[in-house]
Image (cartoon, rainbow, N blue to C red; front, side):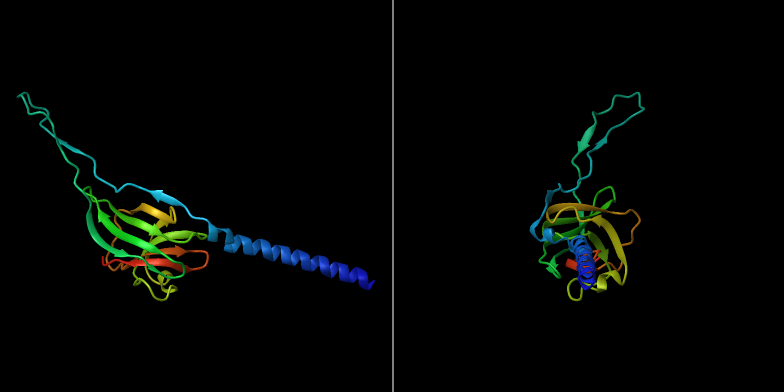
Length: 183
C-alpha cells in the first residue's frame, strides 16, 4: 500500500513540476535572451505639393512641384538603460501635414515578452515602476529590438506634460529603457 501511495505522490509531483515549468516557459520566454530583430523604416516625409490654376480659360503656367517639406522636431532624447541594456535616440516629429510621429533611431534593446512603446508623463530613468502610474499614450507593440522605426501618434493627442518615451514590458511591468522628451 505504501509503495502505491509513493507512486501516486511521485506522479502528482511530476505533474505539478511539468505544469509549473510550462507556465514559467510561457511567462518568461527565456529563449528571447538569445533572439533579436531588426527593422529599418524610412524617415516619414510629406507628399509633393503641386500648384497651378484650374478652371480658367486663360492659358496657365504648367504645374509647379514644390519639394516636400521635412519634418519638424518637437522633442528628442537618448535612451537610458533600465531593466535591460537599451540605447538609441527618440524624437517626436511633426510632419508638414500636421501628423506627429515618434521616431526611434539606432535603437538597440533586448527582446522580451509583450514589449510596447509608450509616451509617458514620468521622467526618464530611475525607478521603472512609475511609468504605469500616471498618464501614458500607448503607441503600439515594439516593432523590433534594433534599428530605425516610426510610431504614429494618434491625431488629437495632447503632448502637454509628456516627458519620456519608454520601452515597456507589460507582462512584468518593467521598463527596458526610456528616453527624456520635453514636450
